Image (tube, rainbow over all chains, first blue to last red; front, top):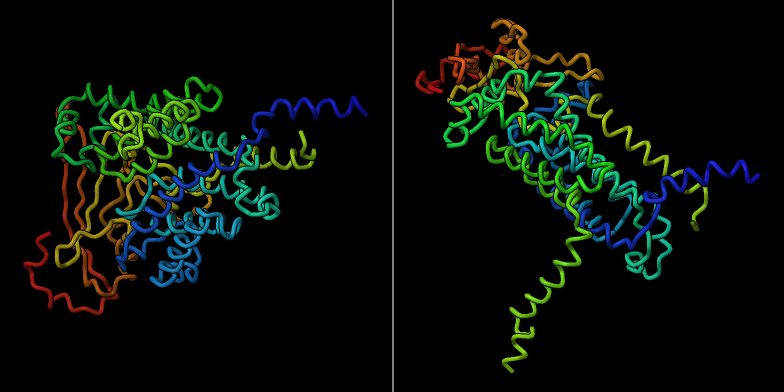
Length: 311
Length: 159
């Protein structure tokens, strides 16, 4: 009996970090950030343009389903459901149903608004997975929440498993790596020696920008920037296993997103925010930063040591 | 560990499932869903064909509404959706093919009697910089339109 149990114990130990739980409130900041980005994306996507509602051309090949989804009422209904569900989820009302409604509704909205100029193409991958992972967490731990009396004591209980932040890191790193590899192997990115970046800049970037003009006129500079961007993206997977590299990769990916926003005007700031929330070492930064912030806030409002000395 | 072995196994199964789904789902859904993460530089190749579609009044219309979304990944799950792209050194679709695709999509817009399609091919100019190599503009008539094209002033097509 003991012999048969041994492999299970070993397996469990191997994944102990994933199964280790901490206080529920530790997981809420990331969820709130993802919900904020989700609400922004959904309220900004495709706006109320009646033409934009007619752009669903993937997923649902049935004409009836397409016609239903293309109808402005359906479109606004789905968006409304996502917005309400996200707000309820942020205060843990109606979970896990509101969690699933938010995640799947967001997926539906991003599918319906795909390829629109206003669509949140560059943000929806990261946001969707982080929402979905948190929805799974709420689903798995729904009983603990239901039996917590009063319900907000759930926040102090140790119900935040290690696999939630791990999967968030994993989803971002894998998506970023796939983006980089897609360009290297499928689209032959760096082999073009900067030409492909120049073409992309000429096709869709703001050509009035000085940086864009410089890159358009100098292929060597374009090649250098392109190789740097691709290297950061392709190496993102290292952040999954090597924690010391995670911060550097996070900063690199934030740079990529900021470049995307500044040069191509893509709505990538939500991504940058999520990358910062997931990959930067907030468990090390927060204990140092929070007391200082608290102290400066108290000083501003006249409750700090400086104010006391004056008294 | 105070949780049961079944619970532990369930949670580990979820972790494996999500780990597998993250790379697989974007491949299944392709770029059509608009949810797979787009790289900052989506177009790669030696030339890139860009389309711009204008309404009769000169308003710029989203090209995706006319089947001309750029640099789409093909989706194995939806083989009926044929992507176009000459960003991979492939030969671009002919003008007639593009016109028939736009005509098909125009069926959803009876308020548009016609659209003006601008096609530009961007590529290497002098080994150091890029520019527009070729440009062509043509009109695609909407066969299902309820609006008389002659009713639109000719100056409105300036776009």
